[in-house]
Structure formats: C-alpha cells, structure tokens
Length: 305
Image: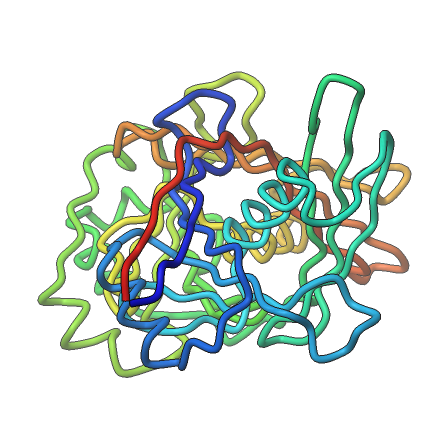
C-alpha cells in the first residue's frame, strides 16, 4: 500500500475557511492520469494539484491540475496554492524579496513570483497566457434565463463574450449586486443550450457594484462541465476578466499602462475570496496578464492507495 501526503490550502484569502480549497500532493510519484483523476474525484474539491518533476530541468516543477471531472491545462488557484506550499515547506529555495520560478503546465511555461518578507510570504503571483477574445454572445434573453434573471438585470452597456487564457469562459455582465445575489443557475438551460459549445460551457458573471470598497468587481463562476456547481475563486477566469474589463473600458485607462483590479468572489458561498489582477497595456494592446493573492495552510492529510 502506498501513502500519499497532501496539504490542504485555502487560496486567495487571509482568513481560515475563506478562499478556494486546494489539495496539494507534494511528492513526485508515478501516478497515472486515471489515478490522479480518481483522487481528485475522491477529495471532491474544486481542484487538486499534483507537484511533479519538470520535463525541463531548468524549470522548478511541473503541475498536473484536476477538477473532480477533468484535467485542466492551466488554473490559477492551484498554481498560486502549490507555489505557496512549496515556499512555506522549503521545497524550493525561497529568499527574502522576489523569487522568480517557472512551472510547466498544460498551456506551457507559467512564470510565478513569490514575494517573501522576513516574517513570511507576502504574495504569490502568476503570469497567464495572453487572452484570446471570442465572438460576442448575442442571445441575451437566453443568458438571463440561464441565471434566472430578467433581461434588464444584465448590464446593457457591456457585451457577453468568451475570453480565454487556456480555459474559455463566457463572461456575462450583470447590472447590480442585488441581481448577482439573486442568481439561481439553471442547469437544465445550461445542458440544453450551453454545455456542448466549448466557448459557452463555463460561465462567469460579474458586476461593478461590490461589497468591499477595495474591490473592482463582484464575481461568481459556474462550471458544471468541470464538476463544479459554483467556484469560490477562479484564477484561470480572473486574468481574462481583467483583460475584458480593460478592453471594454470598465476600468479607467492607466497613465503608466498598468491596470490594478481586484475581484471579490465566493461571498454567496460563505467563502470570501480576493484575487488581485494586473493588466499591462501598451500601444493599445494587452501585453501582460497576472493574478495573485494570499493563501493559508489549513492542514495536512494522507491518502492510502
């Protein structure tokens, strides 16, 4: 019988029982794809990440990321959480100041920075692939029905559009915070009209009304195709969200081209999460997309195979 050790982390939070839960399996093993998928399904968290030796020895580690249903080519909170665990446990040498690492993921190389102070880790940040913008989704009435909202509760000034930095999400702007709290995701509508199209099967909603004054947007994400009814913090969707907000003028232009955005998410689930997004725009083009935040180690466990 093999024993696998893992660490349970809350990501994108400074308080226990907030953020997005993550299981980080720390030891290189010869687990098959099927075994990793079954472990992720057994733990039934939004995502589970397996730290593996890199194919390129110049890179720090390779990450395999799973939801209960599928393997993902890239994901935010597993990347941030895994880096946090590796820094906290000394798995990779981490010095005071900025530490620059590169992880291998399904989308390719993912640069990560770990900022450490004398009293611990201040922040972990990852750079995401530049987002691609898909066509606008024109059936606004059907999108409103998907969320159990009226048509006038969607924001009429912004498009419904798919954006992807490796995983496509359909972004649906909502008019108000009260409407966001009313959302009742219609799985029957999703299955019939959204589930078969890779550009519409993962749904991200947001409004510019927020609960916390330091936040830019209030967000919710629904991904039944991943086995996630609702996600408390979605890093893979937050970089493209920031790009969407910059492209469509939701956040004001920055004189230095650096746009700083904060997304609050998971509040309706009782797991408040705060994701910091940085978008660099030069010559009217998005040049860099980064997301970051804080994490807390909640515990450790063992799995017997």
